[in-house]
Amino acid sequence: MNLTDGIQFDSFAAFIDMGGYAFNVWAVYALFALFVTVNLVAPLRQRKALLRDLRRRQTLNQRSAESTAGVAVDEANHKAERVET
Amino acid sequence: MWLWFAKLGSPKWFYELSSKWLPWLVGAMAITLAVATVWALLYLPPDYQQGFTSRILIVHVAVAGTSLAFFPLMAVAGTITLVWKMKLADMVAKNAAALGAWFSFITLATGSIWGSVSWGTWWEWSDSRLVSMLFQFFLLLGVVSLRSALEDSDKAAKACALLSIVGCINVVVIKYSVEWWNTLHQPASPVSIESGSANGPEFWIATALMILGVYLFMSVSLILSTRNEILRRERRALWVQELLHESD
Image (tube, rainbow over all chains, first blue to last red; front, side, top):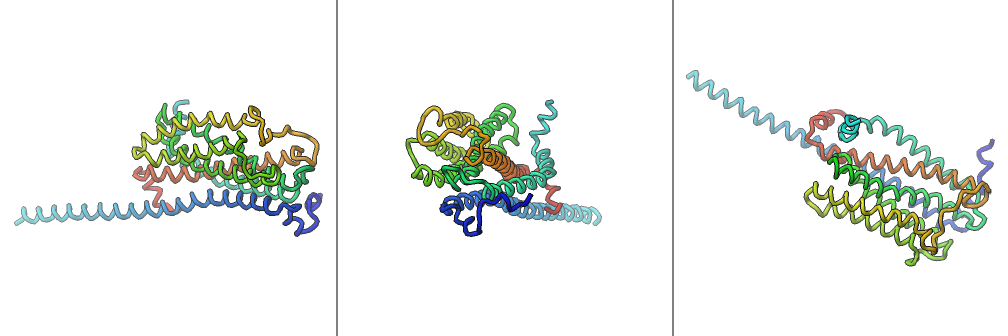
């Protein structure tokens, strides 16, 4: 079976024209394509931004955890020194 | 059974399972939508009355039919939220409201564009199908704004769950509006085996394929936004923190 057999149009121009209802038919399919694309791309972009934000927070948290741990180590060292002297 | 239920409600479990399923769902969605669209635009014979504008109905019927699934879906999720306080159910419900509003809007817009040719009017206030669908659009916008208006997320979830359950009444009204009140919008055509008309085999096979594609698209979009919601609400959980170390 030839794939072109069932095509309802003789020319590309006729396909675009849609029997005189080009505006209505193409507006609906354009709207549909936009609708599908937006509702797939938006959550994907949101995910990207979310992951970036969460990773940034994670490094900030780790740094602050490290610095407080550092202070604790310093204090412990000071105490040890005082005991020694 | 209860273990399975508890597992299903775990955001982590859903996140991991959906990671595995997503590629397949996206693939099936892309193929189904592509085949249905090409078929509808190129191969569908013109309807004996509507000509090529009948191509619009493939999209309109698929989106409209799927739009009716949102309130029942949100009502089920809302009941689960109210009774079992399952976190995942509310995350799905939250994203379903926004997506459902989109579906309702596209239903109205595509119907309007079709009606402008076939009925000679873009809108008819006396038609129950049109007005009840517009009402669904506003109701869904209402659910979205109700959630953002209430600061307490627990209260917001409960209020939205209640509104979703009540909103199901409107779905019944939309469904039977064409039979209860006889105005402009025609009832669904009975399936016919005669080709060359908008209820012939080429049409309903193309429509069925488009409905499948639109349902797959709805699932994929909803899963994607639910996964985002999971990451946002569970950001302090150990498994999310560990996940951040991996690449996307």
